[in-house]
Each structure stands twice: as structure tokens, then as C-alpha cells.
Image (cartoon, rainbow, N blue to C red; front, side, top):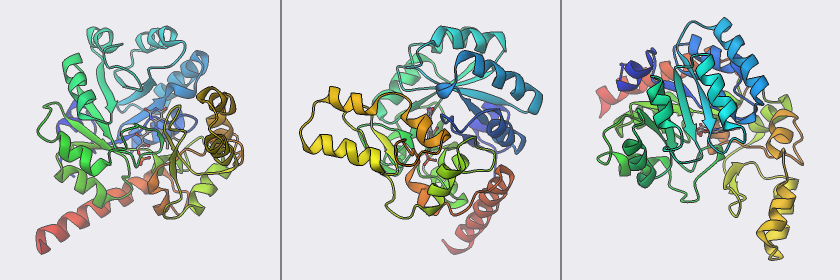
Length: 315
Ligand SMILES: Cc1cc2nc3c(=O)[nH]c(=O)nc-3n(C[C@H](O)[C@H](O)[C@H](O)COP(=O)(O)O)c2cc1C
């Protein structure tokens, strides 16, 4: 796997980023990814500031390789998190779920590399104007919170190809070395992978959640809760209840009441498969065991190389 502007930007061996994921990507997962030559991200979205600080300390003890954090911009105590990012001299920040104008300038002034997650050309252009260093282009196959536009990764990458000049990291539906190669041929200089790592040994998700992913086959996820915040997940009792409200023409407030707080914690971290949100991407169909991060990396890289050889010989 050759280097790209993404490997140069982060100082990593492989252009593979582990997406920040609530309740999955603490220091254990992120440091394992960085130690394998990718870029591990601590997912701040599910952490109180004190918990985040503990993870920062552990992260620094667990790897001397480059790593970063993922910060969803709707986070309620944003300033406390920004202070910790400065205090611990975090060098790479991926922001998501908000405008790239909110924090990019402040981070850039401190010399921090900033990447923002987008799902459209409109937001990609906005990122470039805001001065981010790279974007993650995330298609509708991806697990977790998603764009209402429902643009697939394949279309999004083609749409973006001649629209922006900063490097693109593809995300959504990537579960193999061949998929990484496909993204590279569509102009992406790196990939961000979530679901594969959510089901890894090092992910802090509950074993019930991981086993549920293993059971999930083709068509086993849906993009739901579109009225509030579109989320890709495995349907269950909770989504059935949401659907009953929908078919009875309930108001968005009634749906918000049912959603309440802590649904993703219940599903992903506590392993409550009936009441929680089981957020995962379409690529769950291809996940059939719980593997270590090291195994996942070897698999991805071997497959990338053999697919590249195949293309050179056959196409
Ligand atoms: C369980 C789960 C939680 C996620 N949480 C976040 C998050 O906190 N912030 C974020 O920017 N993206 C989040 N994502 C999206 C991932 O970072 C990544 O972009 C996405 O999973 C890539 O698509 P894939 O699932 O097909 O690999 C989450 C994804 C999953 C599966």
C-alpha cells in the first residue's frame, strides 16, 4: 500500500483511519489501530470530560505512534473538551455533526491538524473554505448518525472527485482490502472504517452487541429515526415502537420522547438489544467473527495487495 497525502499528513504507515465511535473507541481500540500503522481516534461523543481525560492519559501510555480524537460538535460541554485537547497537546482532531466553522480556526491557530466529516459536496466546499486539512466523505452505508441525503459512498466519491483539492478520506461500507482499492481508484487518499472495528476484540462495545452484528446478514440494517437524526442501526423492539408512532402520525416531540436519552449507551455499551440503539453499518453483513485489530489490519492489507495484483494482470 503506497503512501498518500493522508499518510504524509498524519505521519502514518497505512492510509487507514479508525472512525471515532461512541461507546466503542476508547484508548484500547484507538491505540491498537495506531500501533498497527493506521490512525486511531478516541471517540469523545460518549465521554464526560473526566472520562476523556483518563483516556488521553492511557492513550499516551499505550502508543508512541500518531493518533487523534473525534469530536461531534453537538457535544454539550464543548469548551471543556477543547481545553483538554489543548492541555494534552492533541495533534489531530476529526470534527463531525456540525459546521466546520465552529472550531477549525481555533484548532489551526494551535497547529492542530483538522479533518471534518461530510456527506455532500456542499459541506465539502464549506470545509475547504473553513481551512480544514482533509475531509472524511461518508456515504449512507455507514453505521451511526448519517446524512438525510442518503448519498452512497460510490456516488459521493465520484461527485467529489473534481470539486475539492484537499485530500479525501472515504467512509461508509468499507470492509475489505478490495473496497479500499476501489476508494483509492475513485480519488480517495485514505479510508475511515467504523463497523469492522466496532466488532473488534479491542472495541469497548458489549459482547451482546458484537454477537448481534455477527448474526446480522444482508439487509440487516436500516436508516431510521429520520425525523430526528437519521441513524443506521439494526431494527429491534425500540425501532418497532418508533415505527408505531410514525404510522399513527405522532408528532416529532412524541418521537423525541420515545428516543429519550442514552439509547446508544443501552444498545452498544450495556448490550440491551431490545431497548437500545444497535448502531452499525451495512457492512455488518460481512462481519462474521470478533477479530483483533492486528488480524483486521493484516487481512485488509493482504487483500488489498492481492486485488491490486489481480487488476494488474487481468484488467
Ligand atoms: C457504533 C458507531 C458509533 C459511531 N459514532 C460516531 C461518532 O461518535 N462520531 C462520528 O463522527 N462518527 C461516528 N460513527 C461513524 C464512524 O466514525 C465511521 O465514519 C463509519 O462507521 C464508517 O462507516 P462503516 O460503519 O461502514 O465503516 C459511528 C459508527 C458506528 C458504527
